[in-house]
Image (cartoon, rainbow, N blue to C red):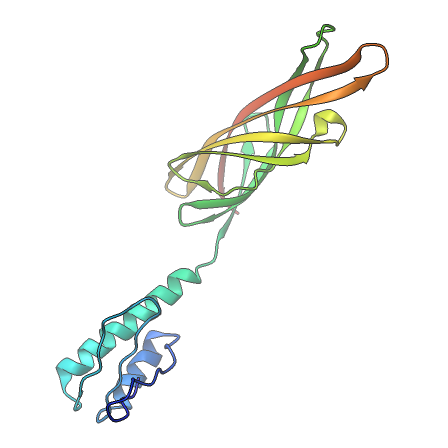
Length: 203
């Protein structure tokens, strides 16, 4: 930023690359320039005078600003893999944060209201909340349930992830319940649960 008299410093644009930061330092030997990244406070402008120490300090601040910008702009890596049952699984990994998990898990639904009938099949597994590598994350979402012919149910998700090298593996758990009206019995309540494991790599 440029100092104008004793007034508040004038803010300049943050560089987009290291080379741009170096150019800014080279082009302002006699000016007072200081880049303050968002969130930084207590940094005051001082006369640089073209000296090497001042230029080095200025470059360090510019580099930190560029590094913060680059980290925030990092793109997620798309992963593809298979579950234990052979179903496809996809998601995106950004650092330790995993989003967009899409797969199906084998699920069993049991009636609990007298008839004790059962349903078995594959249920859609699409947690809305982000998961984290090295942690177990639980979440819930109101979504269509394949085991209930597409009618919505509140699904309870549990995602446990681990990473070795470029391979991400983990365990997926799911449970939910739903009610089916019955003219003779009043209603049938089903409780469902399912789980699987998986392994995936960038692809």
